[in-house]
Image 1 (tube, rainbow, N blue to C red):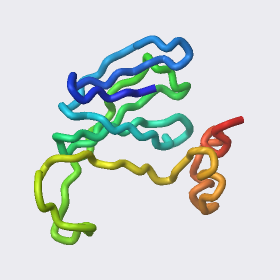
Image 2: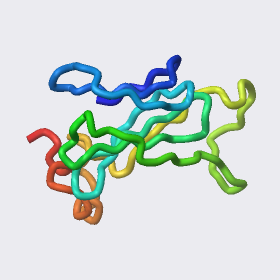
Image 3: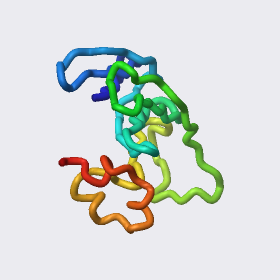
Image 4: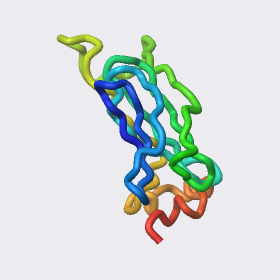
Length: 132
């Protein structure tokens, strides 16, 4: 389990089988949103957004998902260009607010079963049946 701590600027990794903190990783102040996405050949990445940064942190785990193996494996800069679609204009508090994260394809039970077959063909068996 990955938890982002807004005030301390840390990503806390908790082993869900023991409920113990096994690791703490640095993040930008305001990190708060965590979403999981499928990792090629099985397993998952955790994507952590930040309220005060335009960077998305990618946390990776080894193939068996061992919590203690968690490490920052990448950062993605979230910026826009002139052709980026927006649903409205910012009218106040520019730079404030979280960045929502939706990983595609969604591999949660109830969603993965409805994916197009071409996407299913790219997923590991553990992604296709998340609750055995």
